[in-house]
Every structure is written in structure tokens, then in C-alpha cells.
Length: 252
Length: 242
Image 1 (cartoon, rainbow over the protein chains, first blue to last red):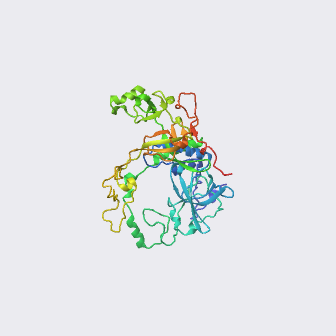
Image 2: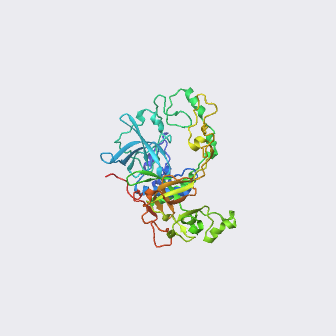
Image 3: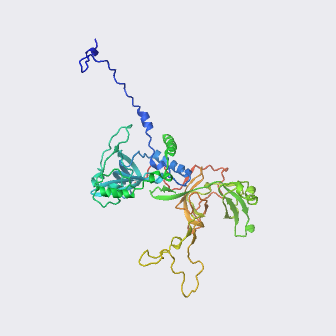
């Protein structure tokens, strides 16, 4: 007795045996290994300094990371930072905000968090390796379309407000970082910078300007820049070496 | 240059100086040199021996040392004389000491009077004819001459200058690196002369320095990193205000 004899096609004829679909095995550990994240402040800038100086600085950075956990985050993720403050009631100061820009290389690396508190926009620039920072928590890990979200200053305040008591958004370990393709609406002009110009190369704004203004902004485009060979700085090999060094040291 | 944090949470900027193959080359006695103290010739970074004449190489051959790129003199008291040929290390200095650093400043070439001496120049508009960055008057009528040393355009930079009273925060004995507070004259990777400070406020600051110098083959075994008392070391947990 087998039920396959009773399986019928849409025509009414006896159906051919279909084998069950093969199970897809997602090797989570391999995915985790393949996805490497090297914090951008480890990559040395192009210049005439001795690479030995960056090596010495990296030793200090790794030493700090062993004691204090600096999580992986990108521009556009929402972070909560608690710092030691001698002038606060409890000597601790907590600030929640969206990471708007990551700057600096080496020990002086910084990140700027932006939030709107009681209708006042506040941006605080924190140093990643400052010993006064007690904890950095990533409440929402995501990327945005741009590397620099300074245009949020001229965007409607709803895009920069985040609840101070926000709960961390849970996500699985092996998933890829989601890219938030949000197009932000702006306040009426004048803006602090002319964001429509091609030098800022912003993709995350919904420009509601007339076509004529957009065309006029393209006058300042410099199409030869992408072909300029002296500006090329290929960091892939440097990143590989530094990634190996950093991951080995952190595992110890 | 690198940031450094103290235990109270303050940030200071720090310059890294590497002691690269320093050897004592020659001892010149007080009578020979004609000064008030005896002198020691010290050589810096190693360089190729082929681009100098034989007579110039004699000093290095006597000391038994490869040719050095820079040779400087240090005025030294008689009890601090070192045998020529001994290597000098970063551990000669200790954290908490104060130090003067001399180097040749970055050469800017022929510069005008506004950049070289900080003159104000003239306004950009309101009728100025061909005069915006010029010195203006160079002397008075009564003087009837231009004084010697008048500030005028000329070659700027590429001269020896010293920053005084810089604190030594940290010393790396393994790689011979001195972490010195603040900035130092000269471009990146230039040769620099480090001396104990001559300022009267720091006269009594050096408590038990290694005298006459730190000898690597001696009995002392120093840890890899020597820190000043106030520095925040990255092995400690984060700073709190209790």
C-alpha cells in the first residue's frame, strides 16, 4: 500500500514520483568566519610616516580592546554610550544617538552620535579609546546609503530623534548587516551645506528641488576624479595583513 | 603623534621618538676642546660608508662603529664620561623626566614677510595699488639707514630650534621609543637631539636617573614598557570618578 499511486496530476493522469528537495545546510560558523569586520581606524592613512609607528599604536589599541569591548558598528547604527562624568549626579552619563560620522585613525579615532532631545539637536563626538567610556552598546546595527550623515542636521527632526530608553533590536549572528535605503526629507533651503552638489555624493536624500536646480548643481561635478590614478589607495592587502594580526592577538 | 590619557581622564598629545643605533664616538677632554666641560661625540642613525672620504670615516673606525648619519656633541661632566663605542638606549631616560628636543625645522624656502615674520600686510581693496603682502616702511627718516637684523623676506625654516621642558611620559625599552609630551621641531622621521632640560624649574626633577647611562649588558632587567605614575595604562579597567 503506497499513497503515491493516488497522487494525481492536474490532467487527472497518475503523477510521476518527485523526490523531496535536498536540505540546504547553512554552515553558520563558516559564514561568521567569512564575514570579517576590521574597524576602519586600524587602516593606516597614506603618508610618509614609518609603518612601525602604526604597529606600535595598534598594539595599544588591541590592548584596550582586550579589556574593553568595542562592538562592530557602522555609520547609521544607533548606539548608547555611557561615560564617566565627574559633574553628574551619579558619576555616569548615558547618551543614545545615531552614528553620523566616524573619523580619525589609530588611537584618536572618534565617532559622532546625534539625537534630538526636547526639540534641540545634540551631536556628541566620542573618542573610541578614551578610558572614561564605561560601555558602548549597539541598540540597532544597520548601514545607510552614505558614509557621512551630516545632512541629518538639515533634515526634518523626526529622522534624528531616538528614544533614550530604546531597547536593543535583536538580530541573528550570521545575518548580513541590513542596509537601510531610507531617503530622508529635508527642511526648506538654505541648508548648512549644498548637499545636492556631486562632491558630497549623497544618495540618502529625497531631493524635492526643481530639475533646473539639480542640473545647475551638476555644473560642479568633477568627472575626472574617478580616473585620477594618484588618488587611488588600494587597502585590500594592508587590510588582510592587519586583519590577521588583530584577530590573532585578540584570540589570545 | 599620538593621544595619551592620564588617570584623571585628561588627554595629552605625545610625540614618539625612536633611538636608532646611537653610539658614543669620541671623548674630547676639557683642555682639548677649550670649553668649560669635556665633550662626548655621539652618532645617530646608521648610514652607508661609501659616500664619505677616508679621513671622515676615521672617527667611526676608531670607535669600531658603522658610519652614522648625524654626529652631535654633548657637554658632559667628568664623572659622566663613557667609553667610545658604547651603544646608547632609550632607557637612558626615565618617565617623569623633563627633556629639551632640538632639530632642524621644516624648510619653507624663500618666504615673504607675512609668513616669515607675521606682518599684517595691507588691505585687499579700498584703492591699494599692487600692495597687499609687502612690508611697508622699513625704517624712519631720522635713522637714515636700515638697521641690521631688519625683518625682511628670506629663506625660512631648515634651522636648528629647540622645544624646552617636554615631559617624558613613557619609554619602550624593547623598541627604544621615548614618548615625549607635545610637539617637536622637524618633519616626520627627522633626526633629533634629546637632552636633559636646562630650565631652572626642572633642575631637581631627575630622581636617580641611570648614571652615566643605561648599559644593556648590566644587571638591571627592565620591563618592556616604563610608564609615568599618572598615565592610564591600557591594561587597567576604564576610569571612574567614585
